[in-house]
Amino acid sequence: MPIAVDIDVMLAKRKMSVGELAERVGITPANLAVLKNGRAKAVRFATLAALCEVLECQPGDLLRWEEPPESPAV
Image (tube, rainbow, N blue to C red; front, top):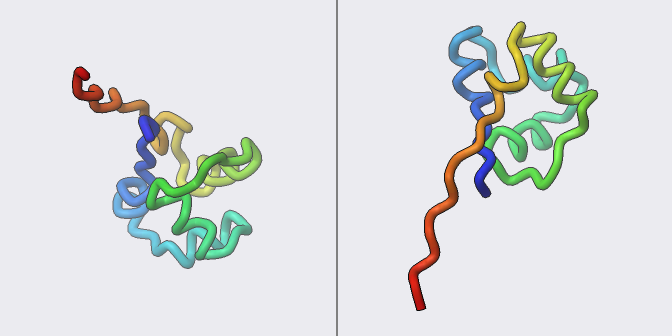
């Protein structure tokens, strides 16, 4: 997926655990892990806003677009 998730970077900068972040945001550690590992298909704006509030950051600090690899020519 061309959207990369950098929650782990912000966790390290804030010296916060996944469990603490999940508790403070109000989601399960399992759901946070799905998002953190880039396996989520979607994220609610309310969840994104809560992540930004707790981590004191902007959405662009957590999400970034990456150029998808080119498909080989046929």
